[in-house]
Image (cartoon, rainbow, N blue to C red; front, side, top):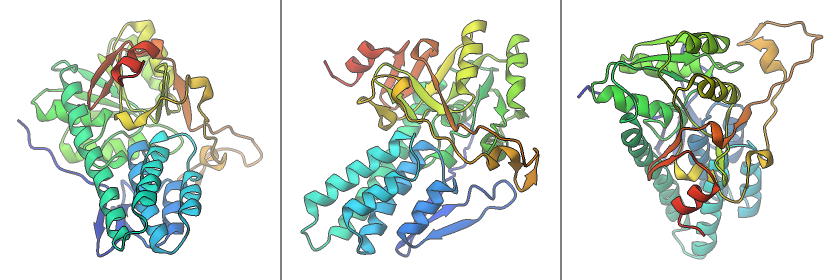
Length: 340
């Protein structure tokens, strides 16, 4: 087996959470110290930290910080919920922290207990990612060309990753794979972050423009597509980084596997279908500028949707830490979660 680096995007030291500033990668590896609830809000809103699982984890630590700062649990909860609207892991983690706090709030060591709960959420995510990697890597053929979108690796989670975690696990198990990395405009999470992670592991890869994917697929250069998810609804529709839906249509047309990798905390069983998912629309300046370089006329308007929705019918399987849901639909998802 190949040796894999254990990249972690956050660490709790001396009473504070430190996170990698993902806006500075790949040029600089900078750790930011989050010292107040405002710091947590800004880190999530400004995409210093991003990726559905990591947002949830940082949100959990932010809840601890807010209570430590003497802010009411309701205000802490609401302020952190408003930071990003689409990734359900944030709401899942905050609900868990709020319920935990209300259960033990009268105890003297409540802050210590809250911190341990946040740390538990982080640890659970890391182990879930390793399980996702184990279930998913068997689906990756040896010598496969794998296409992925955005960043779904260690930097998007507690460590290891979801979709990129599967790629990491396949490489660890001596599979000779090549990865095509969509650059993922406008924030370039693919070219900046995924490529950086692949370099750390020595995994062969090529960065491609988002619009190159269809051409590569049509030429038979792609064997499998693996992506992550920010929210999965009851019927199996999946919200993920903008551009994912396009890849799913291409995969379906060209008859290649299209896998979605996500922990069970990404499922939103209270939302019936993708039509009901709130889609975040960010500042148009992100489209018209590329890392401080203006790439469009100032007078032009731009649309900047952060996510799109892939219908369940386009998905070969959803890979979770508890196993696979092949050709997902409402009946299969209910059965998977033990619901009638």
